[in-house]
Structure formats: C-alpha cells, structure tokens
Length: 278
Image (cartoon, rainbow, N blue to C red; front, side, top):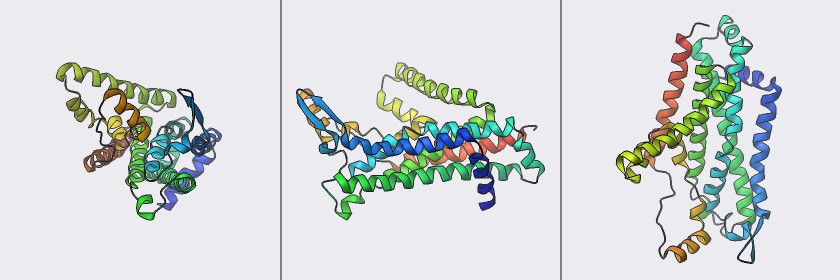
C-alpha cells in the first residue's frame, strides 16, 4: 500500500496545477476561522457571529464540517484531473507495462482519495477544537465530545464524493467533460426531485426516495446547520407562531447508503478500466 501511495503522491506533486488546488483548498478551510470576526447589522443592531453561539460546542462540529464540505469541489478537480492526466501523458499504460495490475492501479487511486479525506478531516478536527476552545461557552469534555459523529460523516462524505469523481474521471477521460458531468448529475438529481414531487405530491416520500441517489445521500450525511442556530429558531417561532422540528443528526442508514455507493463507485471504476483497451 505504501508503494502505491508513493507513486500517486509523486504524480500529484509533480503537477503544478494540482499542488496549487490542494494548497488553495486547505487555505480556504482556514478561512472558517474568519467567521469569528464577521459583523453584520440587523434591525439597527450590530452582531458578531462569534457572539451568537455558532462556535459553541457541540454545535461547532456540525457547522464546520458542513462549511468545509462545500469546498470539496477543489479536490474533486484534482482527482478528475489526476485521472485525465493518466490518459493524456500515457502514465497509466506505462504503469501497467511496468507491472502494476489494473486492480492495484484503482487501489492506488482510492487510497490517495481516502488520504485526502483523512487529512481534511484531521485538519477540520484541529481547527474546530481551536475555535471551540477560543469562543465556546461550554468546554466540558462531555459537551466537547458530543456530536463527533459529524467528523465521521464528513470523512465518509468526502470519500464517497471523491470515489464518484474518480469513476467519472475513468469513464470520461477528459477532465473538463468529467467535471461538467458531475454538475450535470447534480442538476439531474434536482430535476428528479421535481419530477417525483409531481408524481407523489409528498415531499417526505420524495426525500426518502432521493436519499438513495448518490449526491443526495452524501448531502444527507451533514444536513444544513443554519436553522439549528437558537437565534434563528427564536425568530422563526415568533414569525410563524411555532418552531419547526427537524432532525439534524446522522442516521445509521444514511451511513450505510453512502458506504454502499463508495463500494459501487470503486467497483465500477475497476470494471470500466478492466474492460477498456488501453
């Protein structure tokens, strides 16, 4: 495994564009810390986000993993380009000639994307601890360690999305078209949501069905945290007269669905490469 990972990291680091994108991704992750200094006005009153409890434990685990997951497209470009370069520069064929099997080739790619996800998860873990202990009103260990499930959800979400991009990169070969296909798929799932609504007229049923679609399944792992903020809920309750109940946690079956998609994408990547005449 170490040999396979070394090969992939050498390829990535020798590509200037990939280095820039990876570094940009992690620099942008640190910008989450800037939220602590953001001020805004509402009804003539000034607010600082750090004073509104968004960095309180355990809520901060939810918020930071959700924000960080929005930036995953930077690494998605790297992964898609990584596969496209294999065809463009002939390194895939050369690796196979040098004795690397197609199964080992796919394994090396999957190990690399998993490493990206793991490093990103550790980075967010450290950043969240720093922000939490700097601004949180609650620093008891029992509270700090609550909702750590979001870190697992974040890791799985990244691995699944990167595995999806890896498969698309192998399938389409050209990075621009592959990235475009990812966006088209995202739009297609949105269209499907509208179609299912027209058929069933039941949004709960529609959401349950869409939960089996790959991108929607990944999205369900970390639900939007904005409406979880107590200040927002208080305003909503005053306007509507009631507070909407919503589950913000991670269901076990959502994890199972995403794990299944990871296995499917890795298998499809191998099958596609195995059948392809290089």
